[in-house]
Image (cartoon, rainbow, N blue to C red; front, side):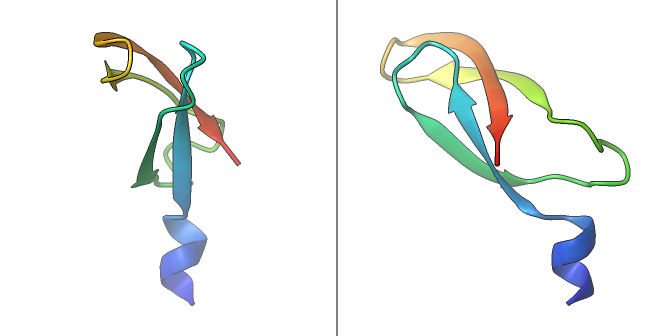
Length: 54
């Protein structure tokens, strides 16, 4: 399907080492590389970087 080709589902894993993940979609045309977002990690109760995991 075309929907999965352009906007695949990705997992964002915390860099704090807690194992907490977010699941989202990304536009592969705008962000072809792995993305890094700063989001809230409830385990450490701080905002940390989350990196794309495949």
